[in-house]
Amino acid sequence: MDEPIYPNSIGTERELLDAHIEFARETIIYTVHGITKEDGVKRLGPSATSLLGVLRHVTEDEYWWFQDRFAGIPYTDSRSSEVDRDGEFKIREQDTVESLIAGFEEACANSRRIAKNRSLDDLAAHARPRDNQQPSLRWLYLHMIDELARHSGHLQIYREILDAQREGNSAS
Image (tube, rainbow, N blue to C red; front, side):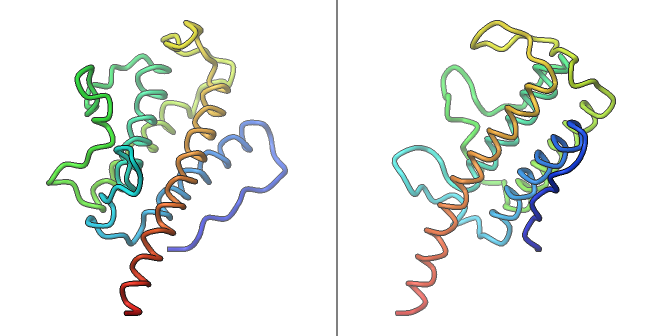
């Protein structure tokens, strides 16, 4: 898989937002591509996060923000609940690396369909829980670029650690 190419600097506001969100999405996939499920579920820190757990989380984010919050179409397939707030980071036995990547790609395609013919000034069907404000599609793009970029950084660090561990084990 080829490394994603950083977007051009020139374009309309919408073209630039589309290009940057796609770059962030592609970088997520690029970073987890080729890992094993065993490596993908390893916890490399004190929290519930893992490479595949973060992939599940950003999949949930795509559905939550574009489908549920913006379009007003309920999304109920979340693994999170009031009982287990880290549920969306958990990987099920039947999950595979391929199925989780496909799930993320499906969530992104769904987000694209929802945003395609909407104005950046259109407001979400539901308010943000944090401030009870209805964000615009423009805000949603910026938020998701931020969210995906932040988690992409986590994934890249985790991937570096796993790759170094694997190289260290093969050298002995």
